[in-house]
Every structure is written in structure tokens, then in C-alpha cells.
Length: 171
Image 1 (tube, rainbow, N blue to C red):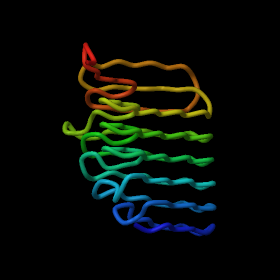
Image 2 (image 1 turned 90 degrees about the vertical axis):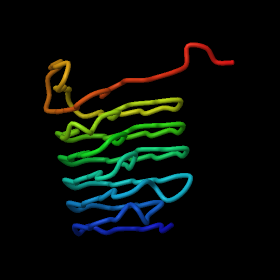
Image 3 (image 1 turned 30 degrees about the horizontal axis):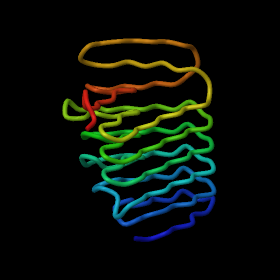
Image 4 (image 1 turned 135 degrees about the horizontal axis):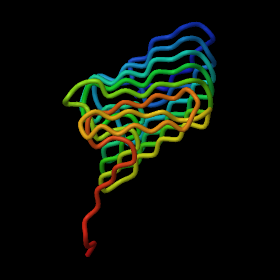
């Protein structure tokens, strides 16, 4: 798997082939068309209005299946978009961590098949930390809405935002 260093221009990264990206800026696009290629995936993006888009089950941003996936975005008006199951800070027998330091960001699961996302752990850990401003979230299905101020927007279909599943008894 590749390690990539990107510059200040707008870049497009195919994350199916990439183990690590260090990007200094620009309005970048990260596409996840398949699961991460190996035991880890790391993305550090310094700035820019970035798009992180998952188009496969259990594929990033910060989605981990028997692996570790870490995404740190330092600034920008970023969009995290998932069309499938188990993306956006999800850990299935693994650890997925997404930290967004600042900006008015949007987290969206946009199809009925999308879910198990936005801080989900199943025999693992999924951690979503958005440090900039407040938080607004909307969830389809059971329909919950929470507004803590600021300009964050989270949208999910089912099992989204902070859901976990563990065995009642661990032998």
C-alpha cells in the first residue's frame, strides 16, 4: 500500500490503494471504494474544504475492519459522506478514529443501506470527535434531533452516532 504526501493544491486520493496520506492543504477529495488495504490506514489533512466519500461497506473514512483507521482533519468546511454500511468512524473488530479540529462540517449517511456509522463500535471502537463549534444532528428512522448550537450537521439512517454492541458476557 502507498504512502502519499500532498501539496496545497486540490488533490484526489483513491484510498483503496493508500495506507497513509499527509496533505498540507487544498480542497481535497478522498474516495473509499473498498476496505483499507492492510492493518492500518492514516490520513492527516492540514487544511481545505475536503470531501471524504465512502461507496462501499466497511470502507472509510476512519472505518476499521480487523484493523486501525485514523483520520485527522485540522481545518476546513469538510463533508463526510457514506452511501453504505459501517463507515465514518466505525470499528468492527478494529478501531476507527476520526478527529476534525475545526470548521463547519457535515456528516451524512444518505441511503437506507447506510448506517452503523459516526462513532460505532462492534467488538471494537469507533470514535468521532469534532472539536469546532457546536453540534446539530438529525437522524432518520427513529427521528431524533439535537441542537447544541454551532454549525455541525450529522445525518444517519440507523445505528448512527455513538452506538455500540458488546456481548452480555465475555468469557
